Length: 477
Image (cartoon, rainbow, N blue to C red):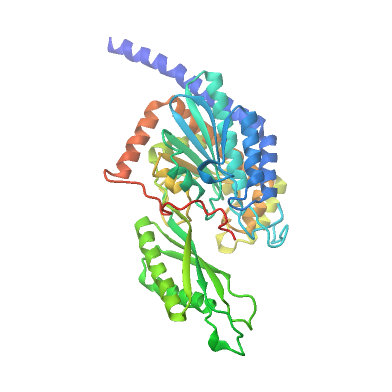
């Protein structure tokens, strides 16, 4: 009797497995069939290169394509004109996919040129590959929607158009607005120089601008009448740098002086410092920020100036979810990496020569990295706040030459070239297949949520690092 039951079970399981693989193969084919269209969209966003909260053309382009695909669009959400949510379907589960499309200021670089060569000197560029990020995420959402229709399955797919990841913390406002309430799982990715689905943490951060107001005077004729706002900024930076000796090793602090005066012979009446603090522990970030504010207050007292500050952003560290990461890794392994043409390989080798000790074998683009927990520090992302609200999973795809760092001219060059678009397609397929797993396997979501709740702990309460402030829509100015 037991043998008969076992045999029957196997007969039932095998067809289901076969159909599941067919579904995934069909999804991959559907994304490949639109590779030309998605490549054009990514390139248009690369050309627009709009910085945070100003991504009007990029956001409109993605919204237009999603609307054509049958999604319902809610624009201007959470007080951000370039933010939107595109939805399709009904019922559970609800799967969210994140898309970014903001560029970095001052990162202009010509596409496919293996040497520093700005497209327009001083202008913005996609140094973090968000032209690819938003497009691949859109492609995966459309593929998931098409599968929901063809399979006649219940479920809801939501694409989140999230502006200003680069310092503006756009997703934090969306989390705070409750736009992720009722979502069962969230999928995202990021351009990189390798293919991996390895979970790991990022750095929490808090950012802001410190403004000092003094008294102008003739720097030679009446210096005693002046009170230099620039002196206050310099006093603050000096004390911040002394503070570094008394912070933990994982601390990162960086800043720029955005305004330092207008003429050497005029005592500056206004000066401004733009500063970031980062750490793995968001509570350490809160503590360091309070110390920085005290330093700014001290600098103002010592120079007889007035200080005010504005918080421009703040994000949590990413909370990994190994349950979903393992599922995503299987899908990435199925999709595989990418292979360069002879022309692409020649370009990649030239880029590699500019990377110094960071250079890696060009063949790394073809390899899926073994599954493992990521260790060490990295950058920051507002995906962190989403991950403490909904179980979240992500991957990296090789859109840049192996060894390339984000926020570099090499990343901009690759992101506007064919190898960037090839890597983008790897991400699109992997995310779409992972969405299918979540729609089809209720146990996967249950286990992911169980891990998520255990990671949060019994007393967790989400409180954003930006408090109740409105989006800093002019934070670039």
